[in-house]
Length: 73
Image (cartoon, rainbow, N blue to C red; front, side):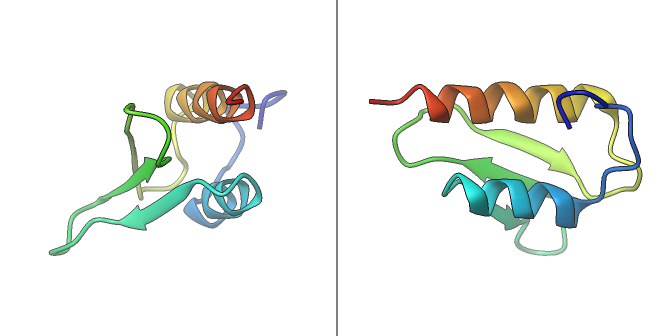
């Protein structure tokens, strides 16, 4: 994802990355079109649309979020 943020990424790829780093990744309740990304030790939240392909801007934000989680003590 870091090398090719504009690739044909699906929400399943995002979920797999989140599982690897113990990041919460939940679909919107009530039929929304965005997934909520969060971590218990970070105040920051991220929303990623379900549509394919996921735009590169959202993948870059996800990578920055994962980097922030990785630097937690």
